[in-house]
Image (cartoon, rainbow, N blue to C red; front, side):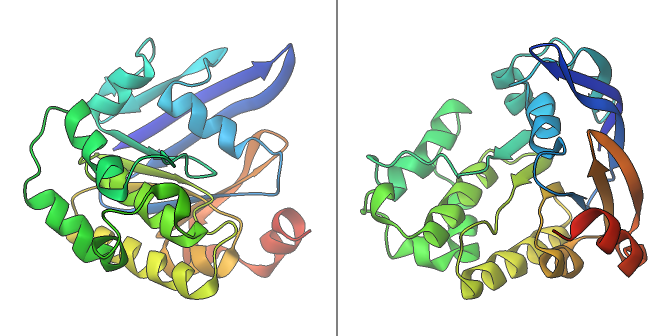
Amino acid sequence: MLSISQLNAAYDGSQILRNVSLTVPERQVVALMGRNGVGKTTTLKCIVGLVRPVSGDIRLVNTSLNGFRPDERARSGIGYVPQGRDIFPNLTVWENLLISLVVHGRKANGEVDRVLELFPVLKEMLKRKGGVLSGGQQQQLAIARALLTEPKVLILDEPTEGIQPNIIDQIGDTLVKIRKEGKMSILLVEQYLDFCLGVADSFYVMDRGAIVAEGPIANLNEGIVRKYLTV
């Protein structure tokens, strides 16, 4: 569904990504893992068009996204939930959701009911401003907003960061439901190991801007964790 080939990126002349290649198969969850500062978020920003790579190819299904603007990538089927969530704090929950429908020219149809079933707490807070929600509720809102664009690939950057354990469990259960529905693939950047083990089908590990390990999630062994993931 999504493939990256030999991706290189740099900031101010400093090489950040080094020949990064990965694949997100159809209807699967792929975890991109690694310590802070190894290039995970930069990889995601290259995919969504917020960072222009030096070289490499990014393809959605069979279409190269090279040269596409961020909005064109979103309309092509890339849904993005950035680190820090980036909801609109002065808009209500409903208005945050409505924006996804408006920019894609859709009406409030059954998709809204679907995301509110996935995140029932939002149904009780439709009139509240996003800025008064807890961190976990804002994360659920950010994911729901991305789902309303009906993406082919949903990209999540650190969805468990700063969130209470019970909400983490709810988000994990929701991602498993989405995977079982078979409507989209998910690329997940995450450092919380147990979360990845619970939701992902396969993994990639980054270190110093390069992919250093990959495979089915069952192959994520103690040696890899100790060498590349523990702090």
